[in-house]
Length: 595
Image (cartoon, rainbow, N blue to C red; front, side, top):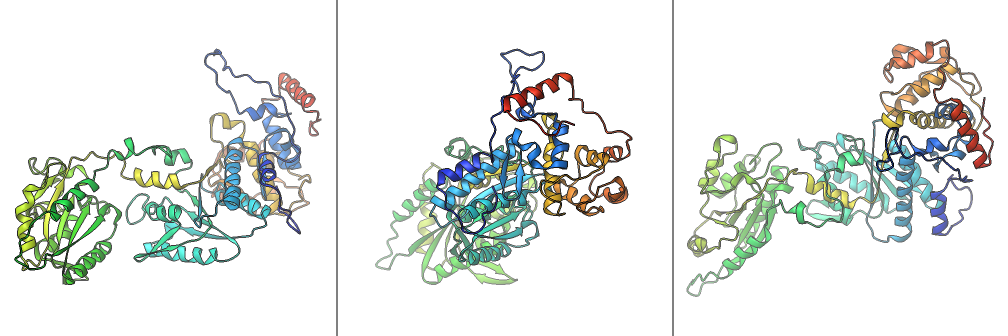
């Protein structure tokens, strides 16, 4: 699929889908299947190698050489392939991923009228061309629909505070108002933030599910766009999301590990509403309710803002009842790290802001257990020594009562009645609400599941290095296509024309199993060399070995350059040559590059 020129012809959706599902001038090729491993049986069948290798009219090494020297059309007609703009791939795994994305983008643009972004994840080795491939797919689909794009890139590993992300969202929002579709790349979206693994992930849940981002206390719409989340810690989708329940699974086993908050909160609210204060004609206090989830906070400033909100409610005569869910969670990497920040409000009715004390007023603090730390408390003693910096004894000593989930609230009647009647009480009343909690297997699972459910597609980019196993025979074809594309696109070699290259240079570039930084390394090696269109590429034109070591340190590269003879291809056997002839007969084409 190439860029349209001149006036865009609007094709029907089915035509678009057919163009994405097939390459130009498709050829049906018969292949001989051998599904039984050597020494195996029909009851235990496995594929011995990628099926595409059986459709080639030559050995994989020769196919790689011909692709690099003569261009894509020498081999592509014999194998599944896909083209999107400047992207050409013949790897079945990449093809499937890119076509899923192409179909998703097309359906989203044509049929989805919701004003929120489309989210896609991309994984692969560093330098494997993750941004380039997805961008070409999206550009080709939107261009076919007569729509332009504007692309933005943000590297989250360089963000230092949450406001950096807010400013990025503002830039995206402004672009969404234009006539072009913003394509936004969030590189290293899985990086650490504020000492927390995958710390940025939770900040994307609302933007990609609701299409809104937080600006202070307000939520602002982002508009339509396509968000590409590029992973930096894992190279495959399955490695990143493999332990997350599949999208659409019910809450059962996944959320069963989480504590219950709503039911005990509703029970306490009902109990408070039934207390007879008998204030002899005086107006009863107005109770207002707030629920704060400490697991969703990462900085004291966030808690401090809530303290100000509590104070404001107290100043107008209300008594705020504040449920601090997961009060016993982690603050950064510190277990029970939030407790110390409640000590002054509980004891003195004050909180700190830049060293100054501020009164918080009358309130009822309800601390709701969310982790196993308080399991069995107070009948079971807490392990104070395990958390010396958490001020656990100081926190417990400030509690004025507790209940267990499902145990009733009558035990709190005296202290609650006293507090609500006593107008002179000027600091919060603190009570605990405890329950039995199981340790979740991974505290990040809930966030990862929400993020995964919001994704509309993903692709794993394989890159140009040998991945081992069945890829040992195939990676050279993938690398040949990448090198040919670079030579044409970046170094201006003629498309479809023969490139004159010394066989030793060719073998070094194609068959060295690994390069250090994927496609980036191949491009760097070419850029550091003295090559130009129309001139033969000799060994002496390649950059020096002490410079190449930045990008390839496999000794096989130098071995290929220095060897006197080009290694023979072990697949060029008489049996295989008969098979290649059979492929030609079945396909109705004569392979042009038999020499």
